[in-house]
Length: 284
DNA sequence: CACTTGACCTGTCCGC
DNA sequence: TGCGGACAGGTCAAGT
Image (cartoon, rainbow, N blue to C red; front, top):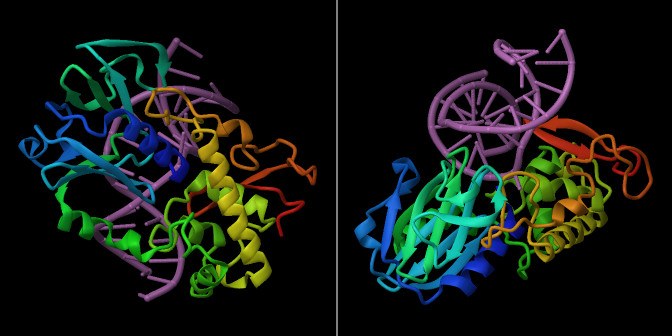
């Protein structure tokens, strides 16, 4: 999915677009992706949109919340003044030029103001209606973990986390119970930034390496956000436009290409079943 | 407890 | 032109 920069891009764009607007209807086309009662949501206004890790929380005026996880291929696309069928003028990956499309599984209507389309090719994502207590319970594991871009994201805290695991460092970076928001793209690129081999046991990292890794994570996440996320696959911004971070990949998806530092050729291997990209020349 | 594997889905791409 | 397999941004539950 959408990792931190992608989800944050969507959060910011939807905040601009729909905070203050009233949900006038919800059409659920694929029941398994919507957990809750439509009547708990219809008629409420969007008050605020929050993000924790890769999860979005839409706070509503009636005390309820829409909690959204996009998983691998979820898209949230806002179309102002959308009609029954809306031509976008440009294609969206796996969704096409017209919404709703065959991958559109939930549609939120905001009267005449527009529609929010939830598209999801692989149908792994979900939207839940929860009260504040429910949100607290749902997000509790994520609050045990550290959020990048907060004061808690220190090399001391990372050192503490890493010292408790012998797993490959890349898997620990992607473990949402430990650090939230980092997924496969940014884990690969952050390790390249820090010149660390993704297979290294987490507890083998030296304090200097941990600090470089902390800086690398912040750097690539910031850059991802600056470019509106990475549209290598299904991801699009809330506007329906692609992000551009894929034009700035360091190692991710760069197998066979020259290392951006010129230290060799990017190689691919598997860690925990996930594609992993690194430069044997500079990542030790 | 730490860690690994398969499951959830649909689509694309690549080699035979 | 099929057809099979690998692969795709993420978690879960059920194994060892």
